[in-house]
Image (cartoon, rainbow, N blue to C red; front, side, top):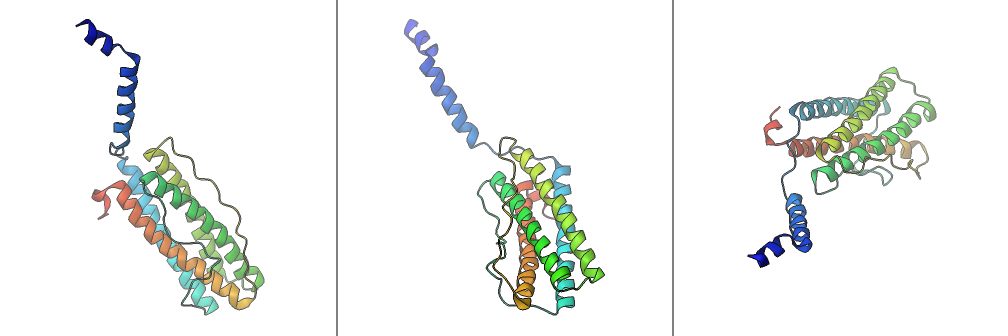
Length: 201
């Protein structure tokens, strides 16, 4: 009896139990997210998808340009990570990066090409505003999923190697095309993170 009592009060015994508890905690399912947070994130994604698609259509119509390949300077449209938190972090950072590239494309389209078309200007403004709101929303969702995960940080300003009218148009088309693909990927990842019950919204 005394021997059993000594084991129960042994500090090593408690440490082992604590370690097991931590390990078990790592495999527990993630906390259930607030339904309104998920709904808001998905609705914002759908709106941004529509606006990004309109921006691409306006760009193609005004500049009369489409291509079969994406230039190397254009960001990738893939969402990285394994856990929900890692994927949300990747989404936020990717969207910040695309925002910076949108600024460059807008400058090329408006300044270097001397083409201040009002419809394209408005489309850039609307898409950028919505994109900034979206990556902020991804940060909020990330905090809800894992409050201890690092906050998304703004990526470095793009350093581009493009020059010339055709290259500029190709780069701009590539950015807008890959943004559209990214947002489609984002929608699928959000539905996965938020749960199967939201897939038919």
